[in-house]
Length: 75
Image 1 (cartoon, rainbow, N blue to C red):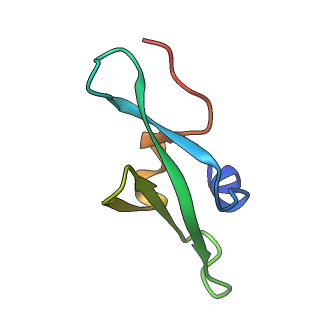
Image 2 (spheres, rainbow, N blue to C red):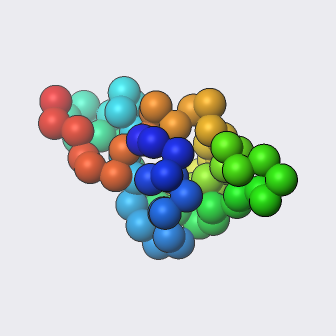
């Protein structure tokens, strides 16, 4: 995922992890976007908050964007 794609994410969108899989071992792990935080002073910075399941939350910053995708990878 590029920086501009990350900034254009909206709450409720689904993102997929490029390397991790679900428990069945066939489908990519997916999460729902809860927040996208950007800064005016440093425009190359972004933090994406996601939720997976009932209790799992995670945050991805601009250095970890290569792990996310808006298109489900096929294994």
